[in-house]
Image (cartoon, rainbow, N blue to C red; front, side):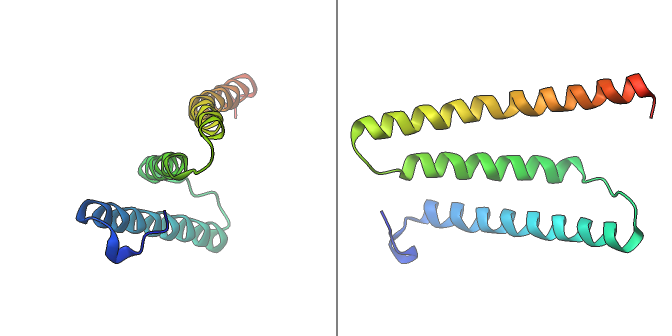
Length: 110
C-alpha cells in the first residue's frame, strides 16, 4: 500500500495536493492566532472557518487511515467499528462540552 506519488492516479494526486494545502493553511492559521495571542496578551478567537477546516481534515485523515488499515478480516472489521464509534462519539462529546461551557457562562454571567 506504500505507493509512490508517481504511481497514483490523477484523482489521488489531486486529493493529496488539496489535503496538503488545507493542512498547511490550518497550521498557518493556528500559528498566526497563537502569535497574535502572545503579541497582544489577549484571547484571539479562532474563526469558524478555521474550526470547520480542522474538523474536515481530521475526519478525512481518520477515514483514510481506516481504509488503509491492513490485517486479517476480523481485525479490519474491529478497526472499522472502533473508527466508526469514534466518528460518532466525537461530535457528541464536542456538543456536550460546548453546552456545559454555555450553561456555566449563563449561570455565572461572565
